Length: 237
Ligand SMILES: C[S@@+](CC[C@H](N)C(=O)[O-])C[C@H]1O[C@@H](n2cnc3c(N)ncnc32)[C@H](O)[C@@H]1O
Image (tube, rainbow, N blue to C red; front, side, top):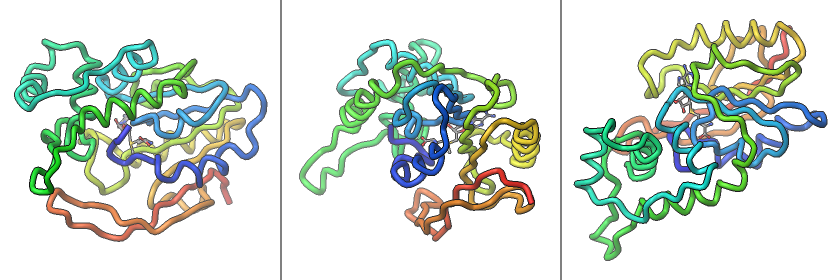
């Protein structure tokens, strides 16, 4: 699903690195799963988690066979945005992410560019994208918790894609220092293989195993900047 910070475009490059030494039966765990854009391409034992209730209810519903609507007009979009409790949370999730500008939760109704002579139906595109993910969602254990409350089986492969330090936040409460302390403590417990996507990581604990220069949008006025997207593995000096 189109999602802010989606790793879909890097999946072919980073998944082979993350899964290289996976053992039969070993759990693959994503504490910040977002649009399920990597985990849907992994097989076997998997645990997904995200703190966004609407996102998680949406993916649970898709996993269980729910078919999203083919179109949502702007009036309905706004009614759902301002009266979330009147609608099922999975529909709020679908409309909030799938029918919004840039896949950002209720960031504004996504409409086609009628100057170019065609109107895109973003809702239909999102419906098709998420239904294409369904097969890859089978048997994933899906949680809706703060990452610190997630129960992770011993000897798991853990891939973390948290809100990046200094970027537009998914929730204004995310504290990256608390995250690094949590993940280092978890990794020090032994057994797990831990990967993190970020621009930077504490050097004494993490080694960069993949990087790529990317252009990222920094606001809605089409301003962008160059960043180096990186994948780190826990490998203390
Ligand atoms: C960069 S996105 C993940 C994108 C995902 N890898 C993808 O490809 O679509 C970060 C995610 O962290 C989630 N998040 C933020 N704070 C969290 C918390 N305290 N616990 C769990 N998830 C959290 C956000 O809801 C968001 O979905």
